[in-house]
Length: 211
Image 1: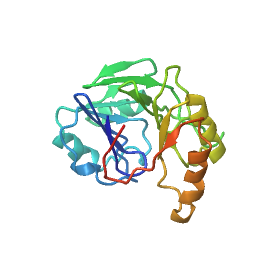
Image 2 (image 1 turned 60 degrees about the horizontal axis):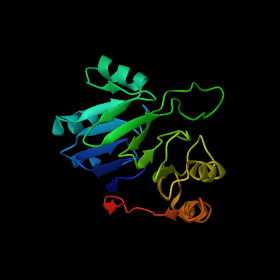
Image 3 (image 1 turned 45 degrees about the vertical axis):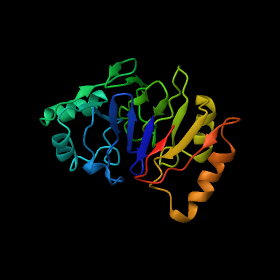
């Protein structure tokens, strides 16, 4: 499996016959020129995970890609004339490699704000991208894309999430909101406080790495 991170939560995953782009949002850059996609997976509707301004050109450049997202986002896209497939917990897709869907809700930001849907994806039976949620799947996870910072979570919750998932390898996503001077403080905790024996990697944006 080869992974390229384009900043924040956007990943290009190449596995078997699949080229999958996850969460092409407006905090990410470099995904706009990607072609040959078999799928675009969107965990939820927030613009840092789905850049509606960039989406038409991305889909036009990738006519064979299936756009798969949570039911509410899919409904909005279809109403706007964009073909999309709704994905709920328990669903499974084959887009060149298996993709299974887990979880249901976005993490709570505040009790006074409505909770929107969020679809977490397990790709190739190995890589888990939770989107904006800390849902622990009921299946083994080898590689975890770990949310690092957000208005809906704390460092202690990210550490406990990694431990609960039990992934042997993790790397950060949802990290564009961390001030550059604070990155080491966050990542240092994740590197030293994950599950026993787990490895931690910080990808270079736009540079592929193998797992």
